[in-house]
Length: 253
Image (tube, rainbow, N blue to C red):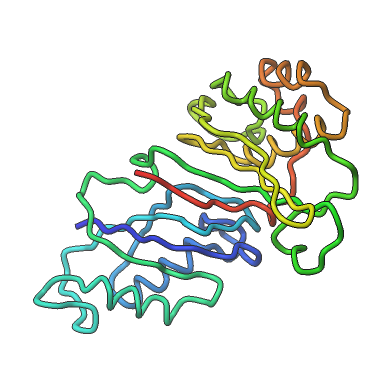
C-alpha cells in the first residue's frame, strides 16, 4: 500500500532533501522517524531534491507500507491510522520539519513522476532588514525589475534549459515546460520571483535568478539573455544565487 506525505521544512541546517553520507538531510530524518514508529525499514521518495539550505512550504513524498503487522499505536481495525501516524511522526521529528498529513493513494501514484506542476519562490529585499536575512536575498545594488520581467517572459518561449543546469549532473533530459515566470512586488522594497514548471533541473531556479539579476543590473541585455538559453552552456549564465531565499511552495498532481 502506498501513502503520500505532505510536509514543510526549514532547510537552513540540512544538506538538502536527499540522504547524504556525511550530512543531515530532510529525507533521512523522516525515514528515521517512520521506520522507528512503524517498526520496519521505510524508504521515502520526494517530489524533488531541494539543495542545501533550500526550504519548502509544501513538499510531497511517498512511501510503501510493507506487509507486516502494524503497531497498535498507529493502526485501527488492522489499517494504518494516518492521523495518528502524522501526530506521532511530528512528535519525533525536529522542529524544522512538519508533516501536514499522510494519505492513502493508488499504488501507481508517484511523488516525483506523477507531479504535473511545481512552483518555486525566490525572495529578494533591497534594503537591510535583520528579520529577512535568513529567508531572502539582500540586494546591495539597484535592479530594474521591469527589465527582469521582460527577460523572465523569454523563458516561456523555450523548453531546453541546459544553461541553467548544474554542471556534471546526470540527467536524461534538460527539457522543462515553464508556464509562469514573474517578479512580483511585495511590501517595503521586497520582491518575489515566482516560477512554475512541470519539472526543474538541479540548481535551475537559482541560476535563472542569478542571470535575471545580471539583466536587472544592466550587465546583460534581453537579447543576450536569449542567447544564453540558446547557447545551452552553464558557463554563459549568471551565478547561482544563495539557497536560503528559495522556497518550494507547491506541487500539483
